[in-house]
Length: 561
Image (cartoon, rainbow, N blue to C red; front, side, top):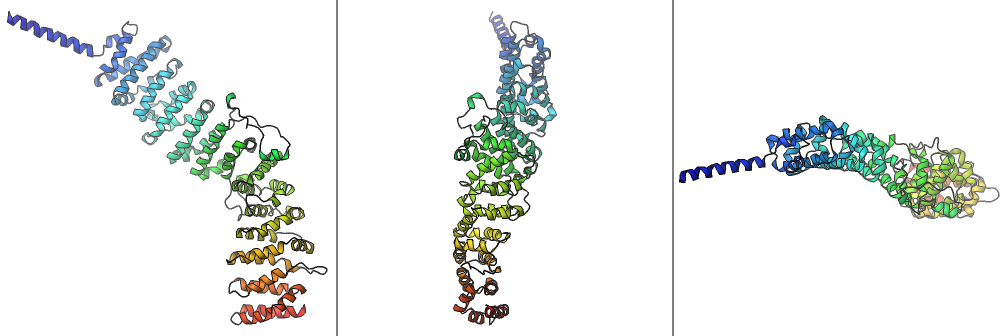
């Protein structure tokens, strides 16, 4: 009796264990029949039951239903994808076997009914195994369907992949959808789209050099995207300071998404900072830039954008290579309004001044600045920038007479001469040397307005030989005329030249030669005699043969006057 009971107990344990084991295994007979009433129930349980040796069979069974999409119920299709999400979330290695088994291409990319759940699945796959999006697995062509359905979520997937961009051997096929499908990204999530392009250019030199040019083009396209109606801003008007000052309202610019425009301009600037050579392939859309410059809130980012295109050698390079001076096919009125706004901004920021310097290499721009020359006497960000701008305008020989006739030119020279910045003397010297048809009357005007004396006062503060020589080059212009009726007040210049004889430097001989040149003017000759310049030549010329020669020329000249 006891033996029979033991056998019954053993058989009970055996069958109970078998039932328990069977209950813990996936019932593929149910999963292979989607119409089985227990299909959804078994599907929900399956992620917990799935073993490594069942994975291929499991994936093949479930994904086979997506072969006949028209006859697949939406609820059941999404339940399959959700089951895969749970399966992958439970164990990372399952994602790897799923990818390597090339099951990705069997997912329902083309059916919008399943896109939301599919995005969740792709999010998990991208996070755990970014190599799944390598072109070797042929997922990229299918990804296009999702971009059209929900570009923002696709951008999230791409952002996740970007974090491990270096781990993907051949990512280009997938990431090129940023350019091939840019329309969808720009329309639905432009700011995040720009941020991702900039980030990719920053983290990967291959992307920057291979795709940077296209990234710039796409970001610039976002600036042409109409804003959503709720983004309209009271500042989206033609409210630049220039137009307020003139009290002559122009045509309002089209409404602009200001937030997006700031992000776009910032993004362009960053990419150009990463690779300045990209500037060569970038063409500025000046009418579009003008529409943004009209908006006060957008002026700082637009100016920062334009400053990217300056030629750093503008002041020393006679033939500017800056794209800012290439204004072919740009309407003159567009150019004029841009200049008006930039001049106003140049009173407050050096960046706008630099932009004007580069644009002034263009004759149309320079002509407009000469005709509207209030900036000469009002001073831009600093007198130095004002002087440099006029130096560049003076490169246009046809404009030199017009500049000299401007009522603002003499006040400009006075301001430049009075300015404490030693840096202004070099560009000021260039301007003086480029003066055409200078005559006695012009020099008398300089004297009467205190310009000559101011230049001397400025020169007296110099200690370095370079600035002193620049001042001497300016003084070397005025002695060439015979002032028969009235002589300018050259006494400050003469006294300054005499003072330079006392210091041993390369400028001593230059000052001595200029004393010889000024000696033919009676007013100057009287100063030289009074200061006993002949004795100074004798004293300092004892060990300087060059100065001895200059002394003989001086004695000969002083006797004639």
